Figure 1 (tube, chains in turn red, blue):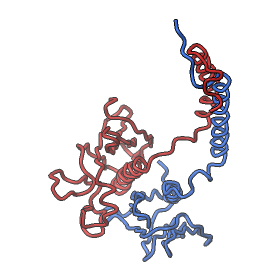
Figure 2: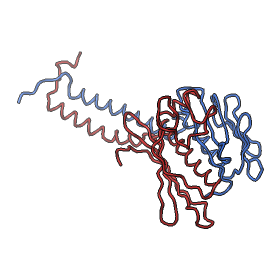
Figure 3: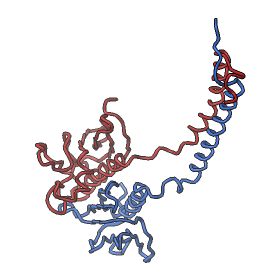
Length: 180
Length: 150
């Protein structure tokens, strides 16, 4: 190698070169970060969003069928029926299977295994202005960390005359449960 | 303090630094070009197709007040007039509007199931299973609001 032993550099020069390199890389890293595409939802996050959407729409359909309907608060429940699971499948995920009441392993395996990782929970609150808020959480694990996607909806409380349609406020977010 | 002589000269290190910066610049420019052309990023992504199906159905159920489940899909009606129809034909999911104009929302679908909730008549449940088993399925529901945009 021609360079070897001819114009060798000392430690001071090496540090100087590294500092120049670091300084030169800073604007490049800045441009690189700016040019990064907008973060797209992962497939798991998207599927979780679809499930929250399913529950919200079920609540809306229930409200259309019965204007006095208000969704009850639920604890965390699975969305599919596992063979050895004790917990009951959420009511929102009953009557959705072609072969039975809930989705089981004997159903379309692609659907079962995709949904098996999710659990759902509904929190409800009475608000001022005769409003009722339902927050739907879908939880799952990602790289060992608990994640959740939620949607919320405002409903009008019953027995308040004619304004049964309610107002809607839906937001979605994903965050670590531990941040709470 | 004793300074040990290295393998490369100062000029060679600067040359390598310049090369690294040049390559990083090229990558950044290419990435910026991709962001300006989002359709070129990943057109085969199933989430993109699902989002299209989701948006179309969301828009239709705002006005639809009834539905009819057919063998290969579902039809949505507004005041007894056909609003749109979704059909799964030859692995493609088609949407046709009231005028009969159609478009493909998604392809490479193995199965598409449209069914009404047995207890809630105005809840359309949609399940889409892609041919590629490694991709996620699509499962969600849509309440027929019939113009009642609460």
